[in-house]
Image (tube, rainbow, N blue to C red; front, side):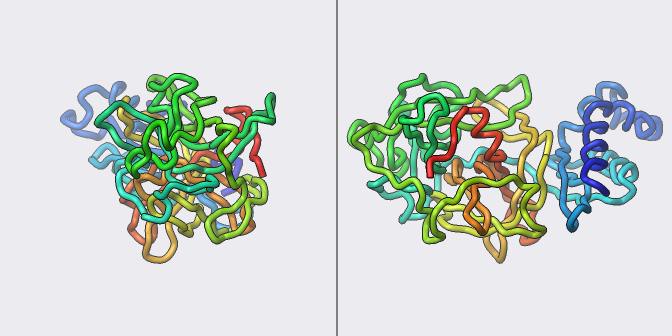
Length: 341
Protein backbone atom coordinates (compact mmCIF):
# COMPACT_ATOMS: atom_id res chain seq x y z
CA UNK A 1 0.00 0.00 0.00
CA UNK A 2 0.95 3.63 -0.33
CA UNK A 3 1.81 5.45 2.88
CA UNK A 4 -1.27 7.65 2.58
CA UNK A 5 -3.50 4.55 2.26
CA UNK A 6 -2.06 2.93 5.39
CA UNK A 7 -2.47 6.12 7.40
CA UNK A 8 -6.03 6.58 6.16
CA UNK A 9 -7.01 3.01 7.07
CA UNK A 10 -5.39 3.34 10.50
CA UNK A 11 -7.30 6.53 11.23
CA UNK A 12 -10.57 4.94 10.09
CA UNK A 13 -10.10 1.92 12.33
CA UNK A 14 -9.54 4.08 15.40
CA UNK A 15 -12.31 6.55 14.65
CA UNK A 16 -15.14 4.07 14.03
CA UNK A 17 -14.30 0.77 15.79
CA UNK A 18 -18.02 0.05 16.30
CA UNK A 19 -18.59 -0.11 12.56
CA UNK A 20 -15.68 -2.51 12.13
CA UNK A 21 -16.91 -4.91 14.82
CA UNK A 22 -20.65 -4.75 14.20
CA UNK A 23 -20.70 -7.74 11.83
CA UNK A 24 -18.45 -9.72 14.16
CA UNK A 25 -20.83 -9.17 17.04
CA UNK A 26 -23.72 -10.69 15.10
CA UNK A 27 -22.01 -14.08 14.91
CA UNK A 28 -20.13 -14.09 18.20
CA UNK A 29 -21.54 -15.89 21.30
CA UNK A 30 -23.16 -13.71 23.96
CA UNK A 31 -20.50 -14.88 26.44
CA UNK A 32 -17.90 -12.95 24.46
CA UNK A 33 -20.04 -9.93 23.62
CA UNK A 34 -21.90 -9.05 26.82
CA UNK A 35 -22.69 -5.70 25.22
CA UNK A 36 -22.11 -5.27 21.50
CA UNK A 37 -21.56 -1.53 21.60
CA UNK A 38 -19.48 -1.48 24.77
CA UNK A 39 -17.32 -4.35 23.53
CA UNK A 40 -16.74 -2.61 20.21
CA UNK A 41 -15.45 0.46 22.02
CA UNK A 42 -13.07 -1.69 24.06
CA UNK A 43 -11.77 -3.76 21.16
CA UNK A 44 -9.00 -1.44 20.05
CA UNK A 45 -7.65 -1.15 23.60
CA UNK A 46 -5.58 -4.27 23.00
CA UNK A 47 -4.44 -3.39 19.49
CA UNK A 48 -1.87 -0.81 18.39
CA UNK A 49 -1.68 0.17 14.72
CA UNK A 50 1.22 1.68 12.83
CA UNK A 51 3.08 1.68 9.54
CA UNK A 52 5.63 -0.95 8.51
CA UNK A 53 7.85 -0.29 5.52
CA UNK A 54 8.12 -3.11 2.97
CA UNK A 55 10.35 -1.31 0.49
CA UNK A 56 10.65 2.16 -0.97
CA UNK A 57 7.18 3.71 -1.34
CA UNK A 58 5.50 0.45 -0.24
CA UNK A 59 4.06 -0.06 3.24
CA UNK A 60 1.89 -2.38 5.31
CA UNK A 61 -0.38 -1.83 8.26
CA UNK A 62 1.54 -2.81 11.40
CA UNK A 63 -0.84 -4.59 13.80
CA UNK A 64 0.53 -4.99 17.32
CA UNK A 65 -1.41 -7.12 19.80
CA UNK A 66 -1.03 -6.39 23.50
CA UNK A 67 -3.78 -8.79 24.62
CA UNK A 68 -5.12 -12.17 23.52
CA UNK A 69 -8.55 -13.74 23.31
CA UNK A 70 -11.40 -14.47 20.89
CA UNK A 71 -12.33 -10.82 20.38
CA UNK A 72 -8.75 -9.74 19.66
CA UNK A 73 -8.33 -12.64 17.25
CA UNK A 74 -11.56 -11.83 15.44
CA UNK A 75 -10.68 -8.15 15.25
CA UNK A 76 -7.25 -8.97 13.85
CA UNK A 77 -8.81 -11.07 11.11
CA UNK A 78 -11.20 -8.24 10.26
CA UNK A 79 -8.38 -5.69 10.13
CA UNK A 80 -6.42 -7.99 7.82
CA UNK A 81 -9.46 -8.30 5.55
CA UNK A 82 -9.91 -4.53 5.37
CA UNK A 83 -6.18 -4.13 4.59
CA UNK A 84 -6.49 -6.81 1.88
CA UNK A 85 -3.87 -8.91 3.62
CA UNK A 86 -1.24 -6.17 3.58
CA UNK A 87 -0.54 -6.40 7.30
CA UNK A 88 2.40 -7.11 9.59
CA UNK A 89 0.97 -8.73 12.73
CA UNK A 90 2.97 -9.28 15.92
CA UNK A 91 2.07 -10.21 19.48
CA UNK A 92 3.94 -7.73 21.70
CA UNK A 93 2.31 -8.31 25.08
CA UNK A 94 2.72 -5.94 28.01
CA UNK A 95 4.88 -2.83 27.62
CA UNK A 96 6.45 -1.02 30.56
CA UNK A 97 8.45 2.13 31.11
CA UNK A 98 12.13 1.19 30.90
CA UNK A 99 13.43 2.57 34.19
CA UNK A 100 15.82 0.45 36.40
CA UNK A 101 16.65 -2.02 37.89
CA UNK A 102 19.47 -3.85 36.02
CA UNK A 103 22.58 -2.13 34.76
CA UNK A 104 25.85 -2.41 32.85
CA UNK A 105 28.75 -1.39 35.10
CA UNK A 106 30.45 0.91 32.60
CA UNK A 107 27.45 3.19 32.03
CA UNK A 108 26.29 3.32 35.65
CA UNK A 109 29.49 4.97 36.85
CA UNK A 110 29.97 8.56 37.92
CA UNK A 111 30.94 10.33 34.70
CA UNK A 112 32.63 13.74 34.58
CA UNK A 113 32.35 15.25 32.12
CA UNK A 114 28.74 14.13 31.74
CA UNK A 115 28.33 11.80 28.77
CA UNK A 116 25.49 10.67 26.51
CA UNK A 117 24.26 7.25 27.65
CA UNK A 118 25.19 7.61 31.32
CA UNK A 119 23.08 6.69 34.34
CA UNK A 120 20.88 9.56 35.52
CA UNK A 121 17.92 10.03 37.83
CA UNK A 122 16.03 12.22 40.24
CA UNK A 123 16.61 12.20 44.00
CA UNK A 124 13.54 10.30 45.24
CA UNK A 125 12.19 9.73 48.71
CA UNK A 126 14.35 7.64 51.07
CA UNK A 127 14.01 3.92 50.40
CA UNK A 128 13.24 4.34 46.70
CA UNK A 129 16.05 3.93 44.19
CA UNK A 130 15.95 4.22 40.42
CA UNK A 131 17.94 5.19 37.35
CA UNK A 132 17.48 5.89 33.66
CA UNK A 133 19.66 7.24 30.87
CA UNK A 134 20.95 10.66 29.89
CA UNK A 135 19.91 10.85 26.24
CA UNK A 136 21.75 13.91 24.99
CA UNK A 137 22.16 17.63 25.60
CA UNK A 138 19.81 20.38 24.47
CA UNK A 139 19.39 24.15 24.61
CA UNK A 140 16.17 26.08 25.11
CA UNK A 141 15.04 27.99 22.05
CA UNK A 142 14.24 31.00 24.20
CA UNK A 143 17.34 30.75 26.42
CA UNK A 144 20.20 29.13 24.45
CA UNK A 145 22.78 29.65 27.21
CA UNK A 146 21.10 27.04 29.43
CA UNK A 147 22.41 23.53 28.69
CA UNK A 148 19.97 20.76 29.51
CA UNK A 149 20.11 16.97 29.86
CA UNK A 150 17.36 15.35 27.76
CA UNK A 151 15.70 12.22 29.15
CA UNK A 152 12.22 10.96 30.09
CA UNK A 153 9.66 12.45 32.44
CA UNK A 154 9.60 9.20 34.41
CA UNK A 155 13.39 9.29 34.83
CA UNK A 156 13.85 12.73 36.42
CA UNK A 157 10.31 14.05 37.03
CA UNK A 158 8.87 10.90 38.66
CA UNK A 159 5.76 10.83 36.46
CA UNK A 160 4.80 14.49 37.07
CA UNK A 161 5.43 14.28 40.83
CA UNK A 162 8.63 16.35 41.00
CA UNK A 163 8.52 20.14 41.02
CA UNK A 164 10.61 22.30 38.71
CA UNK A 165 13.96 22.78 40.44
CA UNK A 166 14.06 19.26 41.90
CA UNK A 167 17.57 17.77 41.97
CA UNK A 168 18.96 15.56 39.20
CA UNK A 169 21.83 13.20 40.01
CA UNK A 170 24.47 11.39 37.96
CA UNK A 171 24.67 8.49 38.49
CA UNK A 172 21.08 7.66 39.46
CA UNK A 173 20.42 6.55 43.01
CA UNK A 174 20.15 2.90 41.96
CA UNK A 175 23.76 3.14 40.79
CA UNK A 176 25.08 4.79 43.94
CA UNK A 177 24.28 8.43 43.21
CA UNK A 178 23.84 10.49 46.36
CA UNK A 179 22.46 13.90 47.22
CA UNK A 180 24.00 16.44 47.30
CA UNK A 181 27.41 15.03 46.26
CA UNK A 182 26.28 13.72 42.86
CA UNK A 183 23.75 16.40 41.97
CA UNK A 184 24.60 17.76 38.52
CA UNK A 185 21.53 19.88 37.83
CA UNK A 186 17.84 20.38 38.46
CA UNK A 187 14.57 19.69 36.71
CA UNK A 188 14.06 22.52 34.22
CA UNK A 189 11.27 21.52 31.81
CA UNK A 190 8.86 18.62 31.68
CA UNK A 191 5.99 17.43 29.49
CA UNK A 192 3.30 16.10 31.79
CA UNK A 193 2.09 12.55 31.31
CA UNK A 194 -1.69 12.27 31.00
CA UNK A 195 -3.78 9.35 32.17
CA UNK A 196 -7.09 10.42 30.64
CA UNK A 197 -5.76 11.66 27.29
CA UNK A 198 -3.37 10.57 24.55
CA UNK A 199 0.35 11.11 25.12
CA UNK A 200 2.88 11.72 22.38
CA UNK A 201 6.14 12.06 24.34
CA UNK A 202 7.62 11.06 27.69
CA UNK A 203 10.20 13.80 28.03
CA UNK A 204 11.93 16.15 30.43
CA UNK A 205 15.05 18.30 30.64
CA UNK A 206 17.40 18.73 33.57
CA UNK A 207 19.33 22.02 33.54
CA UNK A 208 23.07 21.41 34.06
CA UNK A 209 24.82 23.37 36.83
CA UNK A 210 27.40 25.90 35.62
CA UNK A 211 30.30 24.15 37.37
CA UNK A 212 29.61 20.70 35.87
CA UNK A 213 31.55 19.69 32.75
CA UNK A 214 29.80 17.84 29.91
CA UNK A 215 30.50 16.29 26.51
CA UNK A 216 27.59 17.08 24.18
CA UNK A 217 28.58 14.96 21.19
CA UNK A 218 30.32 11.67 21.99
CA UNK A 219 28.05 8.61 21.67
CA UNK A 220 29.85 5.59 23.14
CA UNK A 221 32.49 4.51 20.63
CA UNK A 222 30.22 5.28 17.65
CA UNK A 223 31.48 8.81 17.15
CA UNK A 224 29.87 12.24 17.42
CA UNK A 225 26.23 13.27 17.24
CA UNK A 226 25.53 14.89 13.85
CA UNK A 227 22.02 16.40 14.02
CA UNK A 228 18.60 14.81 13.61
CA UNK A 229 16.52 13.00 10.98
CA UNK A 230 12.92 11.88 10.44
CA UNK A 231 12.10 8.18 10.13
CA UNK A 232 10.60 8.81 6.68
CA UNK A 233 13.94 10.15 5.47
CA UNK A 234 15.82 6.99 6.42
CA UNK A 235 16.59 4.35 3.76
CA UNK A 236 14.86 0.96 3.72
CA UNK A 237 16.06 -1.41 6.45
CA UNK A 238 18.23 1.30 7.98
CA UNK A 239 19.99 0.31 11.18
CA UNK A 240 19.82 2.40 14.32
CA UNK A 241 21.91 2.51 17.47
CA UNK A 242 21.68 3.62 21.07
CA UNK A 243 23.91 3.88 24.12
CA UNK A 244 22.01 3.19 27.32
CA UNK A 245 22.68 2.81 31.02
CA UNK A 246 21.61 -0.87 31.12
CA UNK A 247 22.46 -2.60 27.86
CA UNK A 248 25.17 -0.18 26.72
CA UNK A 249 25.70 0.16 22.99
CA UNK A 250 23.24 -1.82 20.84
CA UNK A 251 22.12 -2.03 17.23
CA UNK A 252 18.61 -2.48 15.87
CA UNK A 253 16.23 -1.77 13.02
CA UNK A 254 13.02 0.24 12.83
CA UNK A 255 10.12 -2.16 12.34
CA UNK A 256 7.23 0.34 12.41
CA UNK A 257 6.47 4.02 12.84
CA UNK A 258 3.38 6.19 13.35
CA UNK A 259 2.29 3.54 15.86
CA UNK A 260 -0.90 4.60 17.67
CA UNK A 261 -2.67 3.21 20.73
CA UNK A 262 0.52 1.92 22.34
CA UNK A 263 -0.42 1.12 25.95
CA UNK A 264 2.39 1.37 28.50
CA UNK A 265 2.31 0.51 32.19
CA UNK A 266 3.43 3.29 34.56
CA UNK A 267 3.12 3.67 38.31
CA UNK A 268 0.29 6.15 37.67
CA UNK A 269 -1.57 3.67 35.47
CA UNK A 270 -1.67 2.45 31.87
CA UNK A 271 -1.06 5.34 29.47
CA UNK A 272 -1.78 5.60 25.75
CA UNK A 273 0.86 6.87 23.31
CA UNK A 274 0.37 7.76 19.64
CA UNK A 275 2.85 8.37 16.79
CA UNK A 276 5.56 6.13 18.22
CA UNK A 277 8.58 4.40 16.65
CA UNK A 278 9.07 0.64 17.08
CA UNK A 279 12.52 -0.98 17.06
CA UNK A 280 13.80 -4.55 17.30
CA UNK A 281 17.33 -5.63 18.17
CA UNK A 282 19.56 -7.24 15.55
CA UNK A 283 21.37 -10.50 16.11
CA UNK A 284 20.51 -12.38 19.29
CA UNK A 285 20.19 -9.40 21.65
CA UNK A 286 17.36 -7.13 22.68
CA UNK A 287 17.72 -3.50 21.63
CA UNK A 288 17.07 -2.25 25.17
CA UNK A 289 16.02 -3.20 28.68
CA UNK A 290 14.87 -1.61 31.94
CA UNK A 291 17.08 1.35 32.80
CA UNK A 292 17.63 2.37 29.17
CA UNK A 293 14.75 4.86 29.35
CA UNK A 294 15.87 8.23 28.03
CA UNK A 295 18.44 6.83 25.59
CA UNK A 296 18.91 8.71 22.34
CA UNK A 297 18.43 6.57 19.23
CA UNK A 298 20.57 7.48 16.22
CA UNK A 299 21.01 6.23 12.65
CA UNK A 300 24.23 5.08 10.95
CA UNK A 301 25.16 8.70 10.28
CA UNK A 302 24.71 9.44 14.01
CA UNK A 303 21.67 11.64 13.49
CA UNK A 304 19.09 11.58 16.28
CA UNK A 305 15.94 9.60 15.42
CA UNK A 306 14.06 9.10 18.67
CA UNK A 307 13.97 9.08 22.48
CA UNK A 308 13.59 5.62 24.02
CA UNK A 309 10.99 5.27 26.77
CA UNK A 310 9.40 1.80 26.91
CA UNK A 311 9.48 -1.78 25.75
CA UNK A 312 8.58 -5.39 26.37
CA UNK A 313 9.99 -8.89 26.11
CA UNK A 314 7.66 -10.23 23.40
CA UNK A 315 7.87 -9.78 19.63
CA UNK A 316 10.69 -8.98 17.24
CA UNK A 317 12.21 -11.33 14.67
CA UNK A 318 14.72 -12.57 17.26
CA UNK A 319 12.07 -13.04 19.96
CA UNK A 320 13.82 -10.64 22.34
CA UNK A 321 11.07 -8.04 22.47
CA UNK A 322 10.42 -4.62 20.99
CA UNK A 323 11.44 -1.11 22.01
CA UNK A 324 9.34 2.05 21.64
CA UNK A 325 10.56 5.60 21.19
CA UNK A 326 9.17 9.10 20.72
CA UNK A 327 10.19 10.72 17.38
CA UNK A 328 12.96 13.19 18.19
CA UNK A 329 11.29 16.10 16.40
CA UNK A 330 8.14 15.60 18.50
CA UNK A 331 10.25 15.63 21.68
CA UNK A 332 12.21 18.76 20.78
CA UNK A 333 9.13 20.66 19.65
CA UNK A 334 7.15 19.72 22.75
CA UNK A 335 9.93 20.95 25.03
CA UNK A 336 10.84 23.89 22.75
CA UNK A 337 14.51 22.92 22.72
CA UNK A 338 17.15 22.06 20.12
CA UNK A 339 20.02 19.58 20.13
CA UNK A 340 23.27 21.00 21.47
CA UNK A 341 26.03 19.67 19.23
